[in-house]
Length: 337
Image (cartoon, rainbow, N blue to C red):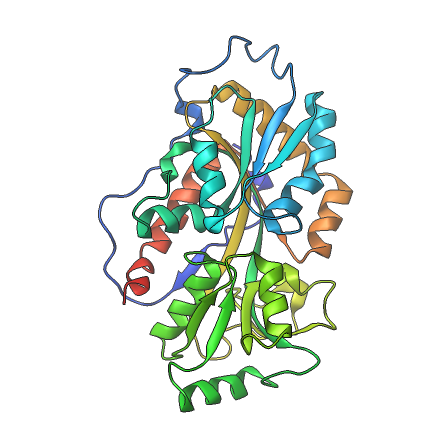
């Protein structure tokens, strides 16, 4: 729908040849969504009241940042207030279950994160939601992961030193991450499959807790979104970045590919509504998001946070998410090893 707005298609990449799982989870296309459950006001009158926004991670994280920079522009375009509500826990699953079960009337939307909403239903028996429970409004931003150490007292001075230590102590080196079945965890299991045998330790408390855990000596190495590094260069020292190619906003950090591991992936942030929301209402919000993504302050904030723009609308996002799901299915068997 807005192909010229789509800057990147960053997903997860590995050359591991693996069995894929069974029948695909299909994302419900916003353009084909049922009108069932929608409120009486049509597109011409929508929105006529404030919109609730479920944010599935704590303040200051990627989901919060992605929404907050858009919020003033969306409120100006839509003419109503957007009221954020933090519904956190279980790696985002609690908030996504609430979003999936909300009334599809256009007055509840929420933040979504890839690959979380793809991995969790594939790997957890009862998440309270399925990927198909959402109509994606748009995918907005992306950022790769970094492997990092404490800057003041680094456990390792370089990735090579870290790699050598792991090879000498297979299975005995911890890597801290925010949650299970997120991109941090996926990168760790792919590295493990490629011969870097480490233990993944999930904090369950978000990205900022990963940084605190490394700085506090709870584990020697952390893995999290690169945005945690921007503005905290004196606190953490990156060892590697998971971008497929040199990451323009941090070109001095070596990629895992450059270091000999054909592993890459980026976390993607966006907005979604419950399945069955009137597609006209989704389009109204999506158009407002597209306008916001052209604003100079939004673009500058993305750069300051170390994030790149995606900028897909509802129809493009359907294909985008399905492509990401196809990619992630080559990785899911690794979690079960």
